[in-house]
Amino acid sequence: EQHLYEIYIFVTLLIFSIKNISVNIATWGTPVQSTLAYNWYAQNALDGLSFKKPSSSCSSTDNQTNPWWRVDLSSVYRVSRVVITNRLDCCPEKIDGAEIRIGNSLENNGNNNPICAVISSIPAGVSSTYTCNNMDGRYVSLFIPGDSRILTLCEVEVYGEVNNSPHTVLARI
Ligand SMILES: *[C@@H]1O[C@H](CO)[C@@H](O)[C@H](O)[C@H]1NC(C)=O
Image (tube, rainbow, N blue to C red; front, side, top):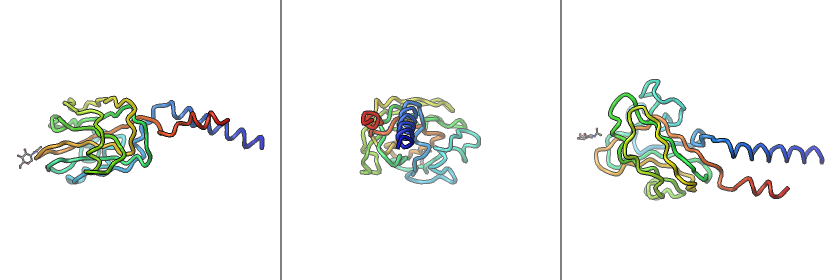
């Protein structure tokens, strides 16, 4: 009994400390994008690599109307910020106007979820941070409205915490 109690305390404290460390929760998510350009897979935006070789470390859609990329975090998180790394090899302006959307709906492929930020521009190879003020959502999407657009992402990082707060667990002891 005493042993179980100790384990319980340990796990609770572990969860509590993990909660307070900034973890990129997108790493474990499942990504998908509207179309695929060559081998620029949706997964490449979550591989922790930005520019080793653009085609193998960045994601990209085809040239299309309303391109999007989305990660399913598999449960609801309270998102504090999203970090986007733009391509280094060329044409950084292609990211201009991309919307970061966070929420629980898959309506319009998740692109009707509330907007955290609209990217005005990101210089080539730069990682820009967008503050989302604890928006709740299971899905984080990047969406560029318009014709003849290409959505390329070299890295997407999502920081936040699980929505059902471990404080509740702690309070029960
Ligand atoms: C997409 O294709 C159209 C038509 O070929 C072209 O005019 C446009 O510049 C392309 N867009 C991008 C972002 O390359």
